[in-house]
Length: 301
Image (cartoon, rainbow, N blue to C red; front, side, top):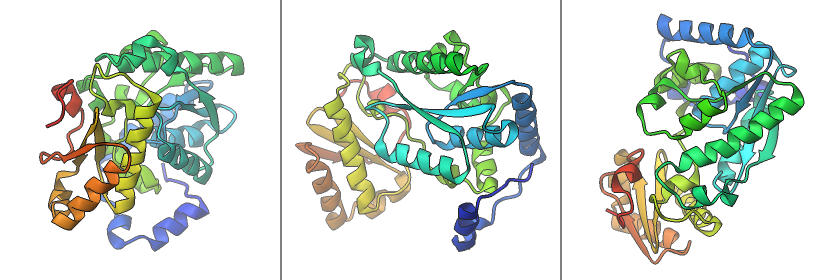
């Protein structure tokens, strides 16, 4: 399917660097996956998507909007303290740019003592709340199918939230049809989606070691610290891991040499200290997705 770009998207492409506009040629297998996704969506009477604005849900939302139209499709954003404001802004901007119908709802996982205790299956309690709310929206508005943006690569990781999705009869078409993260990035790039190169960004609670209570104050501290580092120019993958009074910073390994220069390292640590951390460490192993699954409650590397 040939992507339809808005005027804003055309302007972005027209002013982009050559490296950003020269998309690699898509394989037949990748294109066929999108054809199967379109067919899968077309078979549904109506669809609601849990929409975070990340790489996966952004791609899925644009395909669903094209396939079903605004009367049969709705992207729902769940707002809570663990959802960064910057990500919300990006999700709203993308929805406006690509005419994606959006509804915002509040979720209340912070009222669940199981979630706040931050066990290793914390995501199960978060997603239980999210899908309960979306199921209510679907029932009240007459939508038949609820979907998420889980992809095939996600199935090999520790994701207790998938259990909650199954319990609430939430479908994962990207995973079921074999879409990898790379497939989604390539197809998003061809469509002109700004999310095609966006780093993955799970909820702010994922920066807290298991067993460390999830509080609004800690989530806001993490959010401020990561925003401060972005303002300094840190690009790509970034996490500020919260270990009490210690902030452990993970950045892309390719950027480590840049930030290990004394002046830049001082600026980096000062910015994080101003967010309320007494101590700051830069993890020399670089960013590692799910590193807290390994480190657990240890106080930093």
